[in-house]
Length: 112
Image 1 (cartoon, helix red, strand yellow):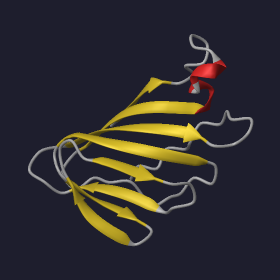
Image 2 (image 1 turned 90 degrees about the vertical axis):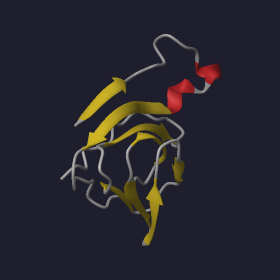
Image 3 (image 1 turned 180 degrees about the horizontal axis):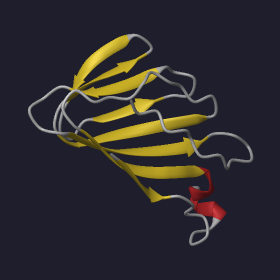
């Protein structure tokens, strides 16, 4: 389950704040065994912040256990996915930043 928290923040903050590059801020929860399909973003970097639970994060073939309070940076063009593995649901926040000169395209949903 994913909820988009911020879709377009630039209406309230100026471009000098750098927020015109923010595509979105998502609060996601993966239940037992759920995960995202491997995907990448050509013109976007992402940051995942794990709020609770455990999972496996794979970035370009490297897989690591992620846990509460972990922060994961995903550069553009890096294939990545995340899967819940612990006893609790995996809850995390994703911040997506468009690196193009003239940003404004929402990412697709990559959940299976």
